[in-house]
Image (cartoon, rainbow, N blue to C red; front, side, top):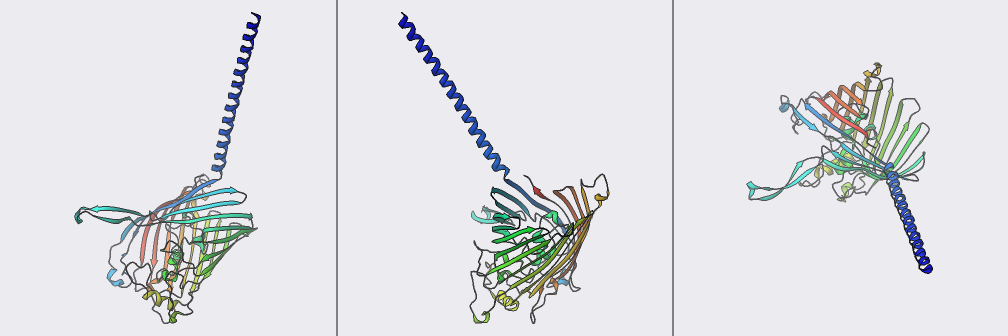
Length: 445
């Protein structure tokens, strides 16, 4: 009997010990799961905290009090009494992404939708025996404007590699819609330069005290996309799946901030452009032609006491312009050719200044909360300064004034309204217009 009782007691104790062990094991498992979950959540939070998301965008409506016919400069008298035309546009909508990998490594990217992006569709046409047709339903562009990896060694030395913005001129450096007063980007630089100018290359930059510098190594421009109406504006583009780089180029920018509220900047570019394409010219007539593009630019910005003043002056020179114009005019004239087929100027220039005053800065209740700028802008530009003994196009010589307002209900959003007038030489028709738009620029995270 005693033996039976002892056996039963041992079994009960063993059972309790096992149960306790199971309970302890279960508790440890639960604790481990919670720890793993917390660790995973912490990892996601850390990764999310290193992500930056932002962007900018513009929507503009314009009425132009002149004809938009493509022959209005060739036969101006035929269009003096023409009716005006209106248009609505999304000039730029951009999504910006950034990530900090740690240890000085960062990534940046921008995806840009110009003029609403592109929409295409395949449709069956009932009127044409059920044939399929591919149609473009919305004209525009989608582009990867930036994608780079950067290593920061120290504030004075950073290395950036990938697809980068070329900061030549005022607008390429400051192209967000909250960084200029007009409804559209400043017209002069936007006409003669690629804008926004972006290339795949390498950049070294840094800041020391009141100075900031940047130098870049880039693929050269392509002279077959130069034109009389836009000088080198189209030269950074490539219709191919890659960018030809038979020639390399260099760009630089230096900014000084020694005076409070004032930035003074110099920038420039140099590189060859002829035969920088998949089709190259080998005839002896073009032997030695390089098509060297040289640009020098100065710009400034002052902000203080409710006043914002900005200005720029840009001058560019194209070597061998006469021969490049002859080659472009005669090259591959098929309807599928992407080339421009026009003469190109030996030089081009653009200069402008704008000033705006924030009326709300003088109102104590509104100062620092909202902004209301009244502004004016003047600019002069010429996209075609011809080489000697080549055809002149006087209609490329233009002056433009714009006056209007910018209202900022908050820092990231601006509502714009302006009247502008483009003055051409007396034999042509002036081009006045009114515009209203809304834009944003900022970071969501």
